[in-house]
Image (cartoon, helix red, strand yellow):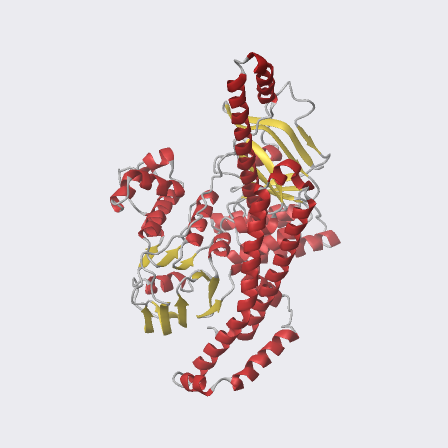
Length: 629
């Protein structure tokens, strides 16, 4: 055990921030601390760093904090350079514990220093620049490099991906995975937490709860815990009501008075199940349907050049109804310009594009959230949708985390993130069939982001969006467009599959022989196309016709695998629901081996089917992906 807090309480200025918490760090654990803004996450980091002490508690048995001897703890701070006139090289080499230039340890330190410096996006020549020449964000990067070089036993990171682009964040994730010491991190970047944390502590109501696994696993376990606790609470309340009715019925009858007293004692001795605290995230269980379904093809472009004075890139593509596509690429490559071009805000430089006849666009960017009103949130929303009743307005706003008192706040008193959330709620309520979104979750906390993710998943229209939130991209996008080298690559399987494929290519893995055989089979199959089909294909260019045929044929090969996954998912959900609602679950728990074994078998079948479908999808991409641009 490196570090342990037992029954610890921290108060600042007379206010209790952490109350009777238990916390531990073992070995080289990577621990994420999550919770709402102001919950006390940074306070916990400062406590571990030794900057704060626990409140005195005479009732506590033993010391509140235990730590290993000679334990080193370092914390990333935003402003950490006393002398900004020193060069980066002077600052980082001064921290080297070995001063002998020709020592092996010194050589290894300098090697690691080079890896970190270039990994964080700096050029080697930047080493000779003075620290004061760098921006605040770049100085934070340098401070993080210095911290990683120090290799403390416990590394404390508060929002480490602030000021980092996607590529650098991915590099830091890779580095921390192989980092041999313990890490405790606080971050709003859920994708970062997913790829680095193996333990999650949730801080809520001044208390800590520990969950093994990464962020996504924590969310699943918490939702499951809430459902089970709610079910147990409901059943106990029903039992209490039944017993109370018996007591009330028989307490005045002499022959049944003893029976009534015994039931009353049962109620008094019962260990009460607490009602579960509502999750901060609101999940949309139904579908959000557009008012007008729209055409099959939402957007079509042929050799479309976008930009201002000169073209940034050229693309030809089609977007089908119902697709949800995320845009990836470095800053300045044309992602926002592309969105504005489709929305009609910026004219194309050259080429043609068209929208479907019945397409209605809902557009959002950071300027959309610049709303001003002295009216309350509820009044403002009701003015936009006067046909709604007050009850309906409050119900809709509550779904977007504007419940109770929050609906009574004035619009002008809202933060930037809250205003953006309100505008997005208005946009979804207006039900267009094509949403174009530029950074929709900027300045929002995790709870707001996850609520909007759920809303966009429930939305049945088409979405085209730009976001730097990789977790949001993974949850919402079913396909992505990668903007690079003045062109666009379409990847049809979502962000996580794209990362997986990119990592395999970066590692030098070759395309399996099976995929090459699939390619040959597709080409050979072209000869078997009926004459009528060939005649139709001659009406458009040979290249486009061949591509269209290949995609359609490959897609048909995927359909049975996808159908099997969907069927098993439904069966598994039905079995899980039946098990949780069965009497055996609440009386025997996990002792009912028959039902438990059946569910395990279904789980195995589902996992195997999903893996097979995923592999087929990746084969499809390797076969035709290069021709999709």
